[in-house]
Length: 163
Image (cartoon, rainbow, N blue to C red):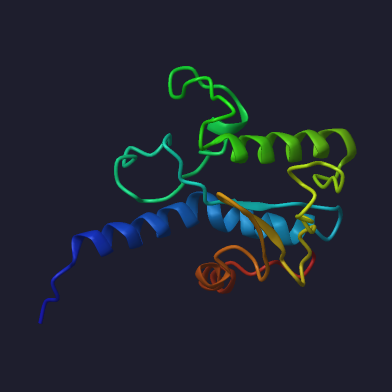
């Protein structure tokens, strides 16, 4: 018998498959390989503010690829010049301070910074797979980002023995 497709579930599943194939799996593989050679910090941006690159911005869908850039750089065609009283300000302060610290010192952490003092962003390692979850608050995740979704990709495209 033919099964009926539930459109919202089908679209969501296809969207995940597409984004995993275009961006996600490659980044997952890159992190595992490059972290063998150098210190790497990675993150999952989950903040869904008033502004987004998503055409579904009016729906509560979540953050999309490169939404964090709206909070790192002023994008006049998409956002106003934010004020300290705007709800996005904490996210802007966290992002810009961490990125500046990393650019200056190769480490996004700064224990003496009023915004960063309560969080220690650990480097990503092949065994722990730590990452920073950047939302309204900052939290640490371990075990990799969407690792279960990439398990099938790892099986289909194993790392060659010489890598």
